[in-house]
Image 1 (tube, rainbow, N blue to C red):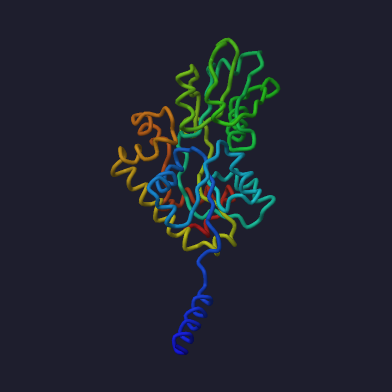
Image 2 (image 1 turned 90 degrees about the horizontal axis):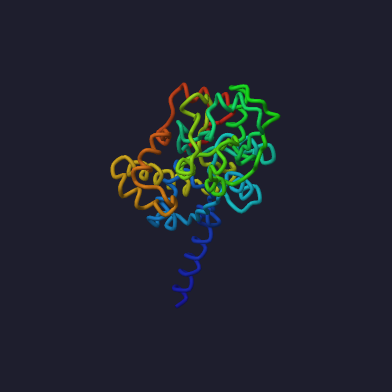
Length: 293
């Protein structure tokens, strides 16, 4: 009996001294960008539960930042723009996992041509998420094509609201800064893409998973396991896109399989690494790659 009690005490002491791999459920927040679907795929397959990871889906890039800033998520998906904003208030946020580069997936849409926008004397209603990469796209467009900024009426809306816009008055110019998959509804409502990150908009947009360095240390095993899931999901996109689409379909209401395949052409997956030219552009954008898994 004494030997049994002694053995139990030894086991208890050993277990209590064993370092934990993490101290809480890892909370990740993301938006409905097609480049983040590997996260949705892993969630729907039940793989995130096995890693003690909770995925929260939000409706805007700004909300995603605010969620992280308020301490309600431990890691978030976003672009180098969101990284720059948050780094001003919270140092040591680092990109740890690359998803993709936008190659047409971010765009500007309108019911006017670029030439008509340049020549019109009317006020131009511009719908966008102000506190996001959307603003950078619009600012780049205005400067590049010499649009009179005094005529721009900035209207801050989240993307699911923007996607419900209707071209009910074609004589009034409208600009919309959006991204996949929200562009599909807008096209059906009478708006056309006038330029994108692939066409005439030389803007560098990289999507990644970001977290604080301390969080990376505390949850590194989970992040490494998540990286493997992301790689497996992207492999499934390429090898069995139909199954992949059926799995993530609930996150993209109204997007057909054909639309999904077509929109995938507007992103470049970066999970397997980046070339030297892209590394240079990242460095120019203060996008550090030292902590990438």
